[in-house]
Amino acid sequence: MSKTKTIRSLSCVVRVFQFMLMSIVACLVSACAGSSSTTPTKTATTLGVVTPVVDCSALASVSIADIGGAGSSISSATVTSVTINGKATSFCTVKGTLAPSNNFEVALPVSTWTQRFAELGCGGLCGNLSDPSQPSSFSFSYTCPLVQEGGFVTAATDMGHSGMSSSWTTNTQQQADFAYRGQHITTLAAKKLINVYYGQPQKFAYFVGCSDGGREALMAAQRYPNDYNGIIAGAPAAHFQIQNSLYHGWNVKSNSTTGDSTGNVILYADKAQLLHKAVVAACGGQSGAQDGLLVDPRACHFDPASIECPAGAQNTSSCLTAAEVLAAGKIYGGPVDTNTGERMLGGSPQFGSEANWVGVEVPTSNSTGAPVPVAQLFSYFIVTGAYNLIFNGTPTMPNIDTFGYNDASFYANYLQANHPLNDATDTQLAAFKQAGGKLILWHGWADQHISPLFTISYFNGLQKTMGVDSVTQFARLYVVPGVGHCGGGEGFPNIDLVSQITGWVEQGSAPNAVMTYQTDASSNVTATRPVYPYPAVALYSGSGDWHVASNYVQGAPLYNAVDPVWAGSYFYAPYTGAVQGVSAP
Image 1 (cartoon, helix red, strand yellow):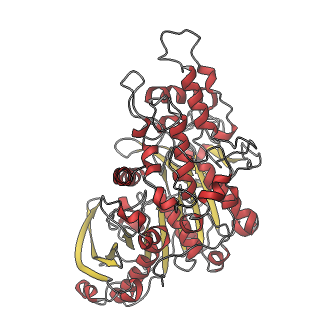
Image 2 (tube, rainbow, N blue to C red; image 1 turned 90 degrees about the horizontal axis):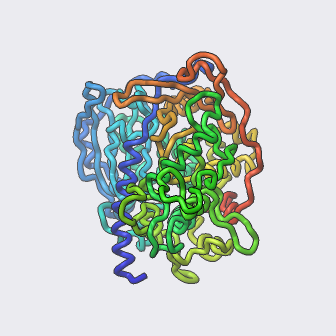
Image 3 (tube, rainbow, N blue to C red; image 1 turned 180 degrees about the vertical axis):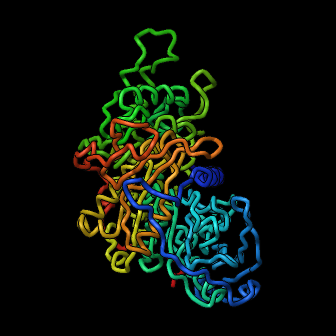
């Protein structure tokens, strides 16, 4: 690919990732108001409100060069007001830059601070600076009083780059700022501002993020175990190297008429919906409720060929053509090594996620419309925009058509080099545990972007490295049926995790059942259901309204098979993270 085409592709992917970030923010809804009736509501420690000891404007003169280096500065410190649920909350909003180009914003409550701090993750390839004073920027915090009443100091960063430019992906320092440094130094700056503004440090510090924000969350636990007392990592793109190359690349290749990026799409939106209906008919309602949800898709044995059109069919609107069956099977199954038969990926889009493929693995248009090139698929833009982050040009610079989809040596030859820089799959969290840290992992079973099986692989890796009993003392994993990437979908996307992590950190109350919610267009709750720590599942008791959480019990796992061996599984093990550019304090 020519340099001009590469830059043009990267510019396009920046727009795609910015859209992805906005979608994540729009979908991320959660609660801080309760849990299952079988478990007491988690309540954070009651901390007194602390008010400022200096005027907000004084923060403009605070030096942050000791954190970001020469050229770091604060550009403004002003009081702003945010209206939440009809109530105005005032913040001292501080904006600045940590050298060379990490733009950040910190929102410090003027009269409502409860001595807590939260760093907020950034999705996609970041490049956007979200407003940390807005509850919509605070993942997993829907209706949470601590958030909606301005109880946290919050901070956000663009992770070292902003706008539409793609030049940062070849800059060594900006690569590092995106990989691991940007969130860390923003946290240090926020903590310094807290000390100055309130005359004391925070009592508790948290990190909350989803998608790449989930990767950033795990990166913090692995590299900076003392930064946060509690971490929520949602749908983490921890396997950055794999996710943005083989995973999305395979989805493009599988759905192409030519088997590469020059072809047109095979499977369109209407056929993905048809596929989804068939999956639900075959495997929905695994909990015992007539809800159409797959509690654990791995217990489903659906075959796309079951809805293949009869030979010579003229009307294929209610069935799949042979080519569509083949494409769907490839997306579900993933690639394998040609010589050994070994799986190349640890996860793929799961049964029950098909309706969410629209706009990612498949286009938004239908099979009756004009042909769509696979080069217009969201998955294509994700892959082509990450080349310079994933690969270092040795031994060559691969592209979406030359990836070793069927060659396990692709990991060692191409993905290994930047694995210690970008990935957050280190399974040794002893330092984080020793520091008293608590970790909650979350994923939706119907995720269309990142397979939940990768997060399960990481959790299993933690247990293998540290022992099941040790991991139970500081980590939990929740996998939610029917929920898409960072929210959305047909399941129960609204979940209370903020109160769970604060209750665990501050009171030692380890989470078990956590309430999840469905809401209508007016945000009215229409159904409730508990979700239990993986691998346990919520099962309908068989009596009472299945929309009501109290009619569910904790059930045994529906799937007990050992994780299949796959080519990149060795990435999920202890390793030392790589560093480059300016060192972080």
